Length: 557
Ligand SMILES: [Zn+2]
Image (cartoon, rainbow, N blue to C red; front, side, top):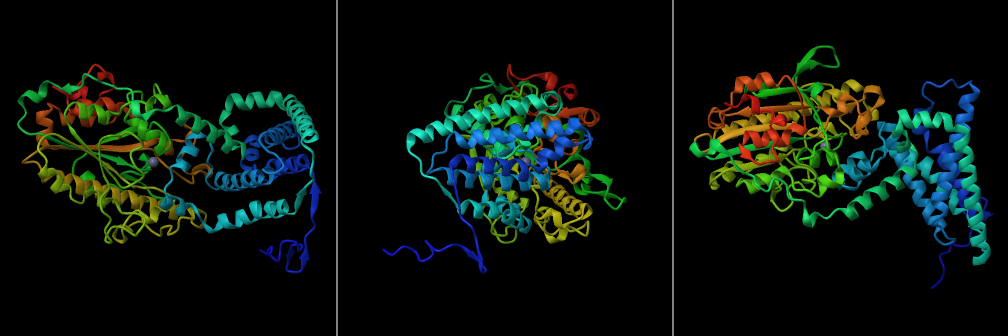
């Protein structure tokens, strides 16, 4: 077979003859490491230089020391696994990671920590497509295209294995010494930085991606979902069940990316009051006004809110390896059904009944469906079942950045909106308008669900609990979307709406005083209350139920 014609020809770009470089591996490694430090870490430098005097010699010493340290770390990271054959593909991969993460860190103010990497790894194709915007293309052209073009022009010097190994060893030693020198130079400021703003290390790219991937994979390798830790093995129906005439139909709506600040009546970006929850308010729901989420991402919050540990004893591995609240309810005799319009239940419904409603064109665009799809066939499901039923409806909710795709045309009430997933194309006002329209649609979806439950009252005692998994930043302090490390997360990402609706029959059967609950709803609450409050609402007894964390306990007679 003939080799391709262009193989030996020098690369030409519109007549431009590009030079070729013959380098040894260590020179190329050094050039790449310097590129990472100088070109790819804008978010890191912005964060660590905040509030520093650019003219002070201390700032320059700190810059030089930190720059040296980061360059040395990336040199070691790439030099350790690379050989002559693998070096260029490895650098190409690191360049791609650095270019892409640099773009999203700068654009949305995100940090790339293990939780964020887990979010990215679990992203479905529709979600990923919404994040691929034209400005990413320009960024990649500059920050990936140019270095790749350069990489393609570098020819590596051949070397015999013995001297190559010696040279690599010596270069690693030099990098270690230089890194230590950098650390010594910046140690005082770095120590203070790591004490007060430890999270900035998740802005050092591409090291942050490699580290977070390694952490995520090692955690997953240790996880053994086949043998989940059993919790509440003694779960059984409590005393109120003896005198009940009807079974319970309890719907838990798991919201997505709804933040408390924009729920209900609040000032819009135009300064005028607007209401994003008129339909549920008209149905007299009990609104919990001060609810804190367990995490700032679905990957953290969802498993956590169904767990016994919660945020107060947060341990990701323990939570992933344990049964969830849903397994406890199933053990107590409830039929538990998880209906999903999003990316699955993250293990909390493992082994339980799962349904994904059939897409239909009125509600679906070929990629995603509006949340009302979750109600398809619901009356049928209720009619065909005998006994207690717990239904979890997992919404797509306010999933960003394409907020404008989360509601039908008839819910375009606040305008003008942001009709693109590329938030940089829209003013904050437009982004908030679309976000609020999506909340308005969730409000409608919840109201329809309540109406469906009302229609079941002759057969069931019905109730609905709605809670969002985390909030969202909509441009406050330059932040967008969510997923900021929990310790430094702004309120917008951690305060979530929570609503409770009880049919009169449900309140009566469970001996609950709705007026008392309405008063209790003004107090502080969190995802940590969910596990125990749902056991309380459904009167499931177990030694693992903590009445201190049961929001309904003070309101039960
Ligand atoms: Zn989420």
